[in-house]
Each structure stands twice: as C-alpha cells, then as structure tokens.
Image (cartoon, rainbow, N blue to C red; front, side, top):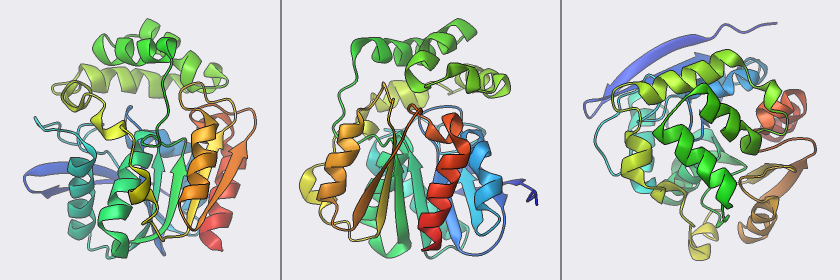
Length: 265
C-alpha cells in the first residue's frame, strides 16, 4: 500500500527547515548527501514508512530549507539537526545518513548519543576516503556551474547506472544550486563537513550501527566502510553489488530490504 508523503516546514533559530514526512511509529530521520535535498530519498520513503515514521528534512543549505551564511561544518549541521528534532518534539530516533549526511549523522551520534537509537551510514563521508581527480572535478563543476552537462559528467562517478537517475531529480538539483544561496554550503563549507572523523571519536559510538556501501562506488572506496565497521564497537557492514555512491537509487529494492530488516531487528 502506498503511504502518502506530506511536506512541512518548521522554523528554529530563525532558520526554516523544510521536510518530507510519511508513516507512523518509531521515527526514522533520513539525511541526504550534498545534493538536491530530501527528494533523494523518494526511492525509500514509501517502503520504510510502511512500518516507521519517516522524516526526510532538506538539510540547512539545501532543497527548500534556508541557505544562510554559515560555516557548514559538521558541528553546525549537528546543531541544526538537534534543533530540528527538538522542534519536532522527537526525543530519540533512528538516524540514517547518506554520503555527507552520513558524516552529519556520525557527528550527531557523537555529540548526542542519547537521541540516537540505531545508526545507519550509507557510502558515508567523514571516514577518510580520498576522492580521485575526476570525481572531484565533477563535484566542483556541478556545484560551481550547475547544468545538465555538468550533471551528466558528475553522474558517471556517483551512479553505477547513470540512466537510473530521474530527470526530474536532476533538474531539481540544478535549480536548487542556481537559487539564492544555493552554493553557500559548498563554497562556505569548503568540504569541512566531509573531513575525516578521528578514530577515537568513532570508538565512542555505542549505538547499533549498520554501514551500507555500493560495491561500485567511484567516489568513496568501500574499504572505508569495511574499516569503520571494525572501529565502531556495534557495527556491521553490508556491500551491495551493482551499485555506486547512491545504492538506494541503483538498487532500491535490495537497499530498502537491508535497511528495513536492520531497523526491525
């Protein structure tokens, strides 16, 4: 049964956060990567919301949320997330983070462990991955001069099958970057949100953790996920074949089953 998806917004500390919401039950917060926004989660929201209350916010600086002048480092994003949850009257939730959203989820779990139930990291930043020249060029091109051509080039490195990406998602990504303040997170953050989290902080995370990675990720090596699964005390690692940096788009059915099974345990 298709669960209806609603859009809402809240204001905290003068910052508007837009979000998608669906389902009921235990809360699952889905944090997108450094891209369009919450719409990235459309392949998963309906499936997960059959058993949980899914909230997918447009992280500050992205989507329909405000894009203020700000440092856009992990601490800033973590503070924003805490404020969002408090405003939504959520005391504890499963936190699911994709790419840069994974780095934000990690920082939040380190700073606010009492607010995190289970933690899920998907092709996560913040784990020391070295980005090769061509993928880095794609990111810089797309975030500096957004266009269909830049997106096609960038998609080679974030998708196993670039043709799987919805054209509406592509056009929306471009429009967000072209909007007022749309490049602030990239230009003012300068990649600080994705910098490596020291091992001693990762060892502090006691939450049950699942690390999911696309086997064919050309942006962040899956070895980072494997290594991290041995550092975080209660972590397990799952590799998805025929999937790149966005396994929820390359292999939605496989990804959704892995995620839901873990949250249901």
